[in-house]
Every structure is written in C-alpha cells, then in structure tokens.
Image (cartoon, rainbow, N blue to C red):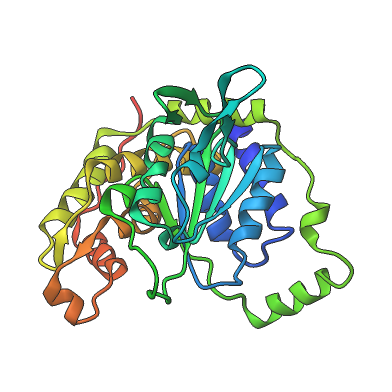
Length: 316
C-alpha cells in the first residue's frame, strides 16, 4: 500500500500549493478520485472550487473541461451533437464538454432538470448516448459539480437520483486570516496554478485505483457500515434515508482512506471520518425537523454517536 500512499500524498501536496489550509477537503477529493467517484462541492463563490478541480486535473495529467450551467442550456450542449457534413453527406458527431477526464460542472443547480439528467448516464455508466449511438468516456473519469447553497432564486434543486450518484459532498469554507495573507503573497506576481506540474501519470493513478480494491475489511466493519446506513432510514427526523449506494460509497472510500494512510485494513475510525461527507446529501430531513432547522450533518452525527462501534479483530 506504500505505492498508493505515495501517489495520494504527491497529489495532495501538489494541490495544496494552490489550495491553502484545506487539507481535509483536498484529501477527500483525492479519495474520490482514487475510488472513481464523483464529488459535489457545495459552497459560496470565491472559495476555490474551480481552482481545486483545475489543480487536481493538472496534477494527474488528465484532460480538463469546465461546463457553466445556465437555465437555457440544452442536454446536447453537454453530451455533444450530430452535425450533417455536406461534403461527405453523412452525420458527424461533435463531442460535448463531458468528453473529458475531469469535468467541472459549475452551478449544476442552475440548469433545468432535463439538462441535469444528461449527466446521469455519464456519471453512472461512463458513457454517452446520442442519436442511438453510444460513446464511451475516457478513463479516469470524474465529475466535480458545484452549487451555491445560499442563492435559491432561478435554481432547480437536484433530484434525489442525481444527488445519490455523487460519492461525496464537501465544503471548502473561507480561509483563516493567516491563510488569506499567505494567499495574497503567493499571487503577487502570478497565480500558483500556473506553476502546477503533473506529479502522477494516468497509468500510476489507474494502478492505484485497482490496488485499493484489495484492502481488507473485517465483517464487523462491514456490519458497522450497514448499521449506520440502515439507521439513517429509521431515524425519527429523517423522511428518506440513504440508499445502498451510500454503504457502497463508505466501503470503497474506507479502502482508499486506509491505503492513503499506509494501512492494508479499514478501521471503524475510517468509517466515522467518511460517514458525514458520504451520507449528508443522501438524507432528506422530515418536515418537523426542517421547522426546527435540523441539518443532515447533525442527524449523521447523532447516528454515529448512537451506533455501537465494533471491537477490533485482527485478520486471520
């Protein structure tokens, strides 16, 4: 697991040359990349969401595309369109911006549900179907979507099916005072993003993505994951709990986190650290709890506090 740890640390340290003081968020983003998952970044403008996606793409040498979602955007603006070539008298496919390896979907909740749904197939099956033809997407493939939690005017909330396809939801938040001072110094002459180099090859990343699948999970840890997810469905403040996809996300993320910290086994502490980012966006709060301003974060924390942690058990 030393190779996975080294690869993960190289990416994290390289991204941190640009994103200052957000190590936990950067680590979660790299975990999502190692698990071949997609990430929803929910935060206010100007905290570095776009820069995070760009620096991640440059660190691993992947093709990067940015899609700015607007209410008048059509599904073909995302997936691509067939254009009639008058010379050859045939239709030619012009790929859309989704045909990249790391795709930043900016303000995903600004587009209509019809356009949002154009992402579903590409996120789940890593392919795009246009005019009856299926086009596979490149590997690795990752969608980083952003949305502003403050502005609700002119937005279309993401449906549960769409939210469920995001492995993680993270928040960056504002930088501390000394970190903002450091940011000013670093950008005196040029943006640090221009100095970012590739530190991992696509082949190394692909090998790491396969290696984490061999990380050991004891049955007690698996049971703990399932208990946490099942408890989200039975909590009195929850209208709709997490699907089985939530358990699968924690399972895979736990393997990646163990490898990132140099272990070949998953601990309950890994599960605890990942439960919030992996489950918060999959929970719909009940009407009574919403009136009391109870957030999904508080519900997940309550479930973590009330669910029994399994005892340690060594690998046979």
